[in-house]
Image (tube, rainbow, N blue to C red; front, side, top):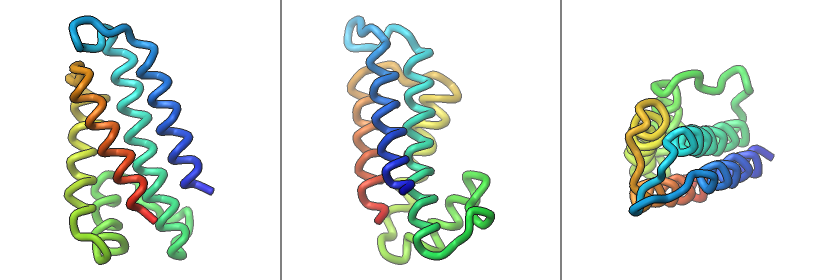
Length: 126
């Protein structure tokens, strides 16, 4: 169920991003970029939550911080794919910190690559 939720968040993020006009290969309205990056990061978290719930964790046991997510990835997911923790850390830095929190992502190619990486991460969490 939540995998669908992760995809729904991801699709919503793309729709939000499409609201920003593009000028000289950069998004002109950073508000939409920030909102879209935040929503994409939430999609990543939703995918991890679904995986953990399917592995038998309860909603109460789900992580409540980025460090908690890193620990859960290390403990429950990375044993199958060691690269996933590093990918998560990169997505956290790019989408949550640079894109959402600081509003530093503007170039269309950079934002689209970050979204592509997030979608690939979501697809790997099964």
